[in-house]
Amino acid sequence: MSSRAAPRLLRLQRRLGPQEGSSMEPTDSPLTTHVLDTASGLPARGLCLRLSWLEDHSQQWMELRTSYTDPDGRCPGLLMPDQMKAGTYKLTFDTEGYWRKRGQESFYPYVEVVFTITSDAQKFHVPLLLSPWSYTTYRGS
Image 1 (cartoon, rainbow, N blue to C red):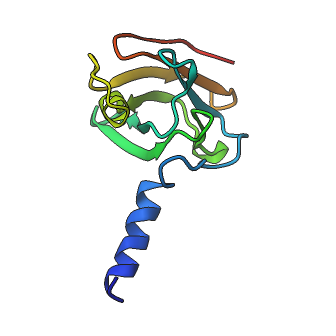
Image 2: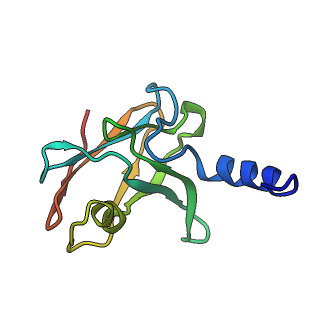
């Protein structure tokens, strides 16, 4: 790698977040997710996801973070406590990429879960149960 490319790569890695399969931040985050592959009965390791926030004034989605689930299927630190604010958020899960890596056809290319946070003092957990042909989500604890 050239000496000019290395700083650009580091900036890109910082912007995108951790590498596939690595955990993000401490588990004291007020917003977490956990993805389970119900077809295999195992955590969905290495699934790419994006967290976005709906800006009030422009009504446009602003991407806050891109990351991957860890070996346990979790993204424990989507937001740090000082980043949490009331508003509408969206988690977008790249289900097509996840299933493609496993040689499996799937029906849903991505799953978007849109939810509202009304209090920045609470914790929010958004689990996703995933198969190639269906998904389920709910507000966890």
